[in-house]
Length: 199
Image (cartoon, rainbow, N blue to C red; front, side):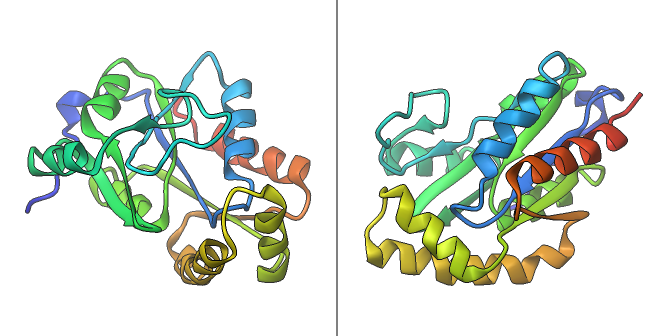
C-alpha cells in the first residue's frame, strides 16, 4: 500500500509538525501538556486513535479517540491514517484528515507517537521535528512504570523490552532529551520547538 503524502497544496508555510516519542513511563504526556500550555496560541495536539481500553481518569477525545479493532481496521483499509502501528497488542494511529486540516490553517501540530509512527511522519513530512524523550536508565523507567499502578508485571516487562528497542531507534531523531529532571526536560523541549518554529 502506498503511503499517504501531505502535499504542499494542503500545507500552510507557517505550520510545522513536532513529534515527541519515548518509552512508556518516560514522561511524554506531562511534557506534551507543558508544551501545549506554552504554545497554546499557535499549536494544537494531534489526538491519536487507539483500540486500547480507556484508563481511569481518561476522557474520550482528550487523551485518545477510543475505538474498536473492527473500526480501526476498516479505517486502515480506507487509507485514513498518515501513520499507524500495533503497540502492546493495541492499534494506535494518526488520522490524516486531522493533520491536513490543521496544517492548511497554519496551525503547528504536536504529536505524541511511537518510533515507528515518527519515522512514517518524517517520510511524509520531511520538515517534521522529531524529539525523543529518554529515561535516565532502564531501571529507573521500570520503577516509574510500577509506581503508575496501571499495568500488570507481565505488561511492564513487555514495555521494558519495547523501551530498549525504542531507545536503539532514537539515533534517527533530530533531538534526544534525557528526562532526568522533568522541569529541565520540559524547558529543553520548549527551546527546541521555539528555535524550529517557522516565522
